[in-house]
Image (cartoon, rainbow over all chains, first blue to last red):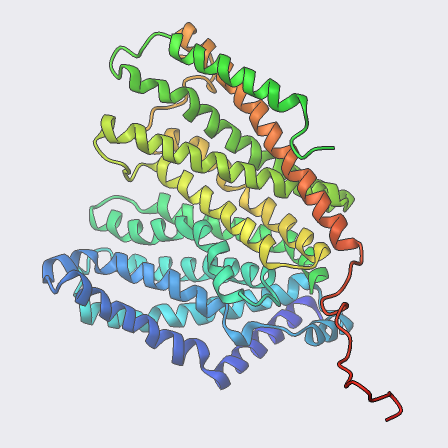
Length: 221
Length: 239
């Protein structure tokens, strides 16, 4: 089996497990929606203010809760599973890349499900929304890669779900900046390319980190 | 062998005293007055934070290459000292910012990226603390030590890449430093003093880590070893 087919099979396996457990889309997504509902209760139901801060809050929730999606329980391989994959000739990079692709797809679904919730609760101005078609996959890819890396670093630790976000969130800040600023720049009539380039750079650095780090992290497991 | 050594702490204390005197003897800033003297600690603290993280990066790469426990200990010690100096730089910058900028904190790119660097390396230390097995800990920390280093050039270049309230580099820049030479001399004196303090901390932390590893490797008495099974008076083992 080629590395490409292995990657597809691992992605498929992760998505099947998620479809059965529903941890990301049936538990974490409603949790994120509840967070979006709570903020107006805390800061006050001032409609113009909520319209202004809505997109930013959406991205904060995507980043914070998206990491829970990448660190979901079903994305944990036991030492026996890892040993089996190794015996089957699956390279560590392929194993983690497959997981990252599955996480990125789940994150994209997570982002798309929270969009109507944000629109309903905050009624943000629709300027620059077509750029979301580029921004959403870029954030999902970057966060999926970084989350996979954090999951591999914290593999087998008791505080995995708390340690993972601590490791990744500071590194994911350029994604937050790019995601919030690209549509805003477009709305003001500026080209949002620098922000898209920033997110793409983070994605590429995360790919590089995964390629270089995965073989070393496999020995950990 | 003591934790801090004998001579180096004395050298550090003398240099700190000289640095303090140089900082007080240097002329006050024309606009900021005496407040600017905080720079003589703030700037060395920031530079030594960079140095700590550069050492962590280099030692992490060296660990990948050679797999020597000493490299892992050096990476960990440098990260701890780097986090300390980053915290010091942030606190001193905040103390300076309140009277000059009017706020303890502002959303300036240099401040935000420095705070992020602080949290990135706190995460590095948390990762180390959470992993008990020394070999596994070294491997994971080496991977994250390399990834985390991305943040360091971003912090340094932030004042050039974005519009910033924080002043651009005055010494670490191409060409002649844009600082009065007597102030520069005091700054360099303090940099030397704090570098020696950095070395004292780094060496002490490495010695502590080595002692810790040695204690872990030596089998000691187990909890409960001294407890013997209860026996009723007058009852022999045979019953």
